[in-house]
Each structure stands twice: as structure tokens, then as C-alpha cells.
Amino acid sequence: MNPQTIQAKAQERAISSQLPYAGAITPEEAAAWLAQDPHVILVDVRTRAEWQWVGQPQITAAQYRQIEWNLASTGSRNPHFQEELTTAVPPTNAMPTLLFLCRSGARSHAAAELAQRLGYPSHNILSGFEGDKNTLGQRKSVNGWCAAGLPWIQS
Image 1 (tube, helix red, strand yellow):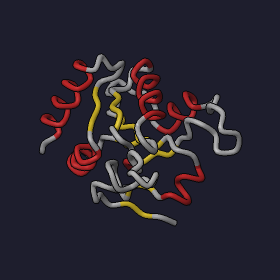
Image 2: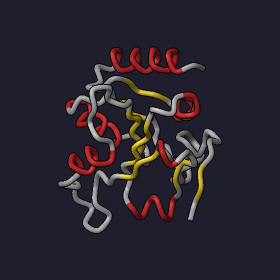
Image 3: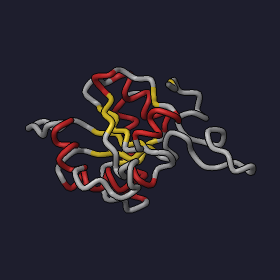
Image 4: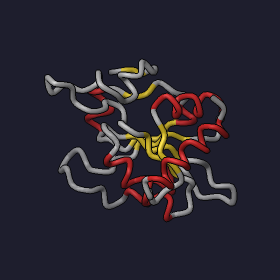
């Protein structure tokens, strides 16, 4: 699937769901877009603990940023998120496309909304890194980056 097709599907989802950002994409679409377009950046908005203990997508370092939406230390919203985002991905005339990822898609929804207001073409990765819980209350098996069999690493 090429980036133009992915963008079109993502935009259709955003319009039909009245989302406040450019698009909503599946983890598979995100991985394909990242593989084909070196200018797309995945912003992982989970906590430091999640990056370290749960795992993280295995993509090129140039396309990956980690910025906590909520602080691991307190669980409260990161008051410096906007500043950290604009430092990690400086605004330019040709704003890079950002793909936001969290555990299941909720924090990344909020982050994509904020980034879109800042002028970044922003997309939320549906179902996130771990996805929804299965009948046993466990993640990583129903949907999300891991369940899709996309490359990831754990420290």
C-alpha cells in the first residue's frame, strides 16, 4: 500500500468519525507508511516505563520520537508536551507528517489533536501499541502494533 492510498483511507476515517486531525490509521498502515516515506515521524506518547518495560516499535531512529503525554512519575499530564514536541520535531514551512502512538489509541488521539492545532499534519494510530484486552484481560493479542506482528523490541 503506497503512502497516498494510506493517507486517503486515513482521511476518510477522520472525516466519517469527525476527528480533529488529518487521519486515523491502522498499525499496519503506519508501518507501511514509515517504511516508504523517510519524512514521516512516529511520536510515541506512552510513558518512560512503557517504553522500557512493555517495548517499542522497531523503526529507524530518525523516524521515532518519545514524548510522554502523561508523566510516568506522577501519572499527570505532561505540562511540557507542546514544548517537547516542537523541540523534537521543529516546525518548518513543510511540516512533517506525524503518526501518534500510545497503548491503545486514547492518549495518541489527544496528542494528535494538539499537534494538528499546532500545524502538524497528524494521524492517530488506531488500537495503539498493545491494543485492546482479550477475554483474559491481557493486551498484545487482539489488535495493535504487537498483535499485527509488526517489528518491536523490548529492553
